[in-house]
Length: 549
Image 1 (tube, rainbow, N blue to C red):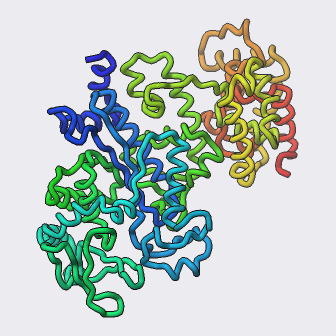
Image 2 (cartoon, rainbow, N blue to C red; image 1 turned 30 degrees about the vertical axis):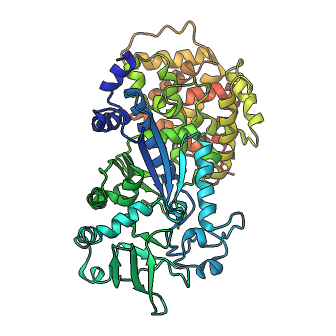
Image 3 (tube, rainbow, N blue to C red; image 1 turned 60 degrees about the vertical axis):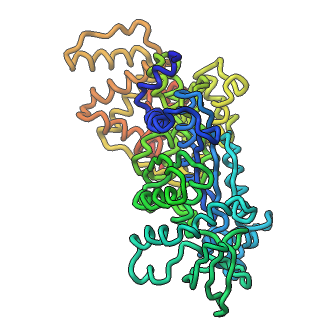
């Protein structure tokens, strides 16, 4: 066993933990089909949302962890339930009236309201595949419509006819009495209207593989279950799909967890072992409501990529999958900076620590180095105080702070500068609220300005702070007004010297008076980036009340 595999066997990272559980199922080696199948499901009743990405990203992380632990080949499949009937018109698509005319028809038979694809289902499938391709996932795309209509599911459907009573018994246990009276595992597709019908069966014939029911007009109709004439209800469909494809692992949201025993039983009835599962907590919008494809609430994939990198989104998805996540725009800057913190930490970590680092799983072990010489949160504040309109304006400040950096040498930093300008104008600028300082804050800001103007004054302030705290004088021989750490020491000393018992109140005052926000960057580093002279001018404007306008 390789050294890496030995370390991975003991790693506490959740992808390795899940991969180890899955590996126990294959003690005899490679399964008969030749690979371990990881599946993710997609319901194309609405546009793909960020939760869909999270499901695929996390599954891919477990898949990679499995390949580290084992030489058994793997495959990742993204399966679209596009033969489902459109039960309601999503609120975030055009041509609502036209869409209403096609309710209950399979999504691949509903015209595309955007006019770019053969059907609404095809449009949403294309959206799914585009973003999976954008993130570089290695996957195969399977369509429910194709599998039902091509005959690929015929064998499992005929098996479902044979086992109809047994599967119905599983389902009836979970249904209310009223629903049970009309329930059938089969949903025929009307040969007249083309709609997916929720109707009771008059008979199910296991000999010739047909079902008989009354169509919408009341006419008794018999259809073969094969060839795309019927589809399975969604719970039986889960189990049947697992059986037909030989799925070994599927991850899904916690809202499915109460139905898992049903899916598993049906899969076993149809002759296949149930796959391993992993449940993740739900994605919520800023109001704490579950993200919905039809509502389009929460942050979309395209919106995240408008303001931050794909890698930062993957980092967000890696963190605590068993904890509900609020998907709103405020989480983006934090995710960006934490991702780059992990990149920088990875370089100096021992192998065991590296395998526990999120970036190892995001990049499948091929981890790049960070070229972010300035944190994203600081870039946002720089964009704010400089009223930057383009990333080129940002580089004028960045180069003061890091003369060797450039858009060519630091492409990720260059991209982040553009993201910061965009994010600032769309989210920060509209919410900025400046205030005037209190008497205590005004005196402290005046002293801070004096220390920024004269290095000797700054040193004296730091010495006073140390003396008042009973500390030995610091060695300030190398103190400089262009060093972020030294400037931070000055800010800290001024707060202490002016009696701020909780220095958090002092820093909050700086942010609210000078930046128009209640939170902000490490101010010493920000002053070094923005420029000492520029910071002095900013403080003067804040003291005069000019920023209030």
